[in-house]
Image 1 (cartoon, protein in one colour):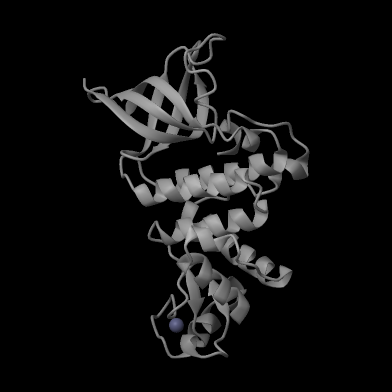
Image 2 (tube, protein in one colour):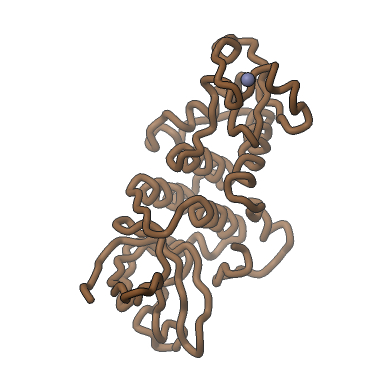
Length: 265
Ligand SMILES: [Zn+2]
C-alpha cells in the first residue's frame, strides 16, 4: 500500500467505534474522500486538533484495497482556522461552505480550483470579512466551478439570448433552470421564479468574474443582496438535493457549537 500525501480541508467528522473518527476531507490531489483516523478520539491522540472541521492540514493516507475509505496515519495542521470554531456566526458560515462542497462534489474527483475556492472562502471568513457577504460570494463562485454556474447570459431554460442582453430584461431567476429565464419561459412557471434586478444580475456576474483579490471590494445594497441571497439559496437547495442549514442557523437557534458537524450535514 503506497503512502499518499496531500493537503486537505476537513469537511466533517463523525465518531466511529470506540475511539476512532471517520473524517470527510476535500483534498487537493484526490478530491473529496473519507478516511478513518484510528484513536483520534483518545485524549492523547497523535492527531490533536488536526481533524477538526475547517482545518487545513497535510494528510498522510493509505488506500486500502476494495475499500472506499482511506486510512489516515498523520495530519499536520497548515492553517487551523481556530477563529472559525469560536464564534457562532463564523461556525455557521464556515459550515455552510464545507457542507456545500460536500454536497456538490463526488468522491475521488479532484479539482484544485474547488480546493482553492474553499480555502479562499475560509481565509476570508477568518480574516474578518462580512460573514453573510463572504458566504454568498463563496456559494456563487463554487457553483460557477462545479458545472452549476448561475446562467445570466441567455435564458437558462430555452437558451434564447435576445432579452437577456437588454437593460429591461424580465429579471426572473428560475432556481430549477439554474439562472435567468426569458419572459416566455417565466410565464410557464411564474410561481417558481424569483425576482432579480439588473443590480442583482450584475452582482452575480461580478462574483463569478472578479479575481478573489478584487472580490472583497464588491459591495451591494441590502435589497440587491437580499434578492441574490434568495435566488442562490433556492438554487443551492436544488443543486444540493436538500436544504442546507441557513448561514445563521446556529446563532438563530441559540444552539451550542457543534464541532462534529454530523448533525448539520
Ligand atoms: Zn426562455
